[in-house]
Image 1 (cartoon, rainbow, N blue to C red):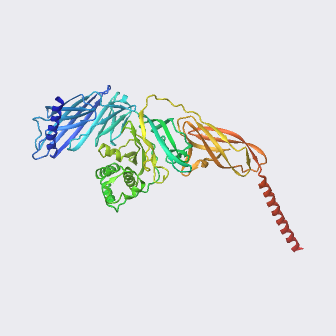
Image 2: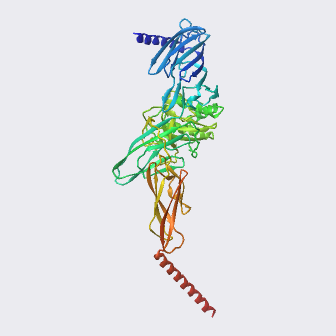
Image 3: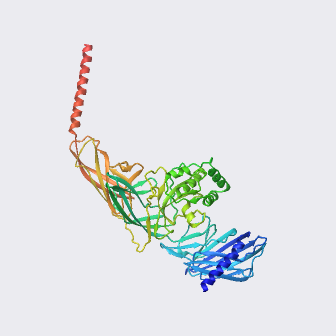
Length: 588
């Protein structure tokens, strides 16, 4: 009965508020939050409401909190007013009824909310998370100021939804962050640590052998990867953008099951900003969309404001296209009848604008780990390097959240790589092919420390080699560590053979937790030797670890070549003697 009464009262208040929403209401909002060492929180909210309507009354105020409120009270211009709290599934809806203290036309009033919660933070992936509310009442907010004081024992703070903030130390135990809020804010304290699991199948329906590439998780300055389990592959491949792939051979009319598990640790260290060459996605200023984009970025005084204006325009005027992504879809962006964008089309507009402004930009892909703790699909976003920071634009996230916002942190996602139109071999985790690689994200229960292990190098050379002719050798490297081993150098008898590891734009590397065999072609002993045994030394540096091996190889003369050489020498001498003889006869 009590619950029914509460719902009836909410409906009544909502009707009352809806009448006032239509009024011209200007509001100023200030939130001050104190996070105590026991993780309880005291929140003070001050809202100044200016009723510029000629006839409507303001009789209530509502705000939603993404955590459970324990206690709250409200005062309007010094008068206590009624509060209704509706709690469900860890979320609290707070409705303030002004009772007889309504705000009349052309009047201003100040509302003070004092709120207490036992724990506004959420524990996930070894982090403390705070999702800060944003005033949802349909008023015009001229100013929204926020400050949060938090205990330093929580660790470093990462910002997922704001790009302008001020941090300061309050005392030995507390720090403070303050900013002007433009959307819901997601804060993370600590460094996320997750287990990422892949379970995929690659099939070959051809009657001949087929080859395939499968994305492996790369390491960055803010992303440390340790494989706990990985499927068998011929070897790993690495491109110039630090993308990692497993090279797989699939037998005719068969399938390969790919199971892998990796422990990934993220931190808030600024990513080493490596950007590919220009994408060449030109801003079509002759189109209607191009003119609108030009108008939006012309309104901004700096890069941040330019992209804020552009991003808000795209968010408000285009819905999310969830159909299969193809590179062909990029050709239709500038058509006048387009009103939807997929994530790749959206990124192409951001990148084109960035390059028009002379900025570096890139398309990235991976997984957003805080969107769900279960199975997650790969996503695609883009980054622009502006004002000495990486600005991250994620169209799918914005549409899911319901707010136009870009971020300056990527600690909330696992990055799988960078995509560029020149990478014909990269299907972006299956996003382009339509066979997306779904990942399962779980908490780390037992964190095992991986001790770097020195790889073992062995070689297989032919027993006998003809001098001066090309031959091949096989280098076997057993990688016992949880890391992908990339070649810093590879020398045979002090001569570099790194080029032998290149396959187009990619270079061979060694898969973690397994042994890979690499064939080295186009070797040759250039010295002319006769039945001479030599030690051939192979020395490799992988991830700053040096390993070597020596093998005895017997170099023999190629008797066919010797016979040919003698024959050519004999013919040459004969011709020379004949010409000399003819010359002497003429003189005599």
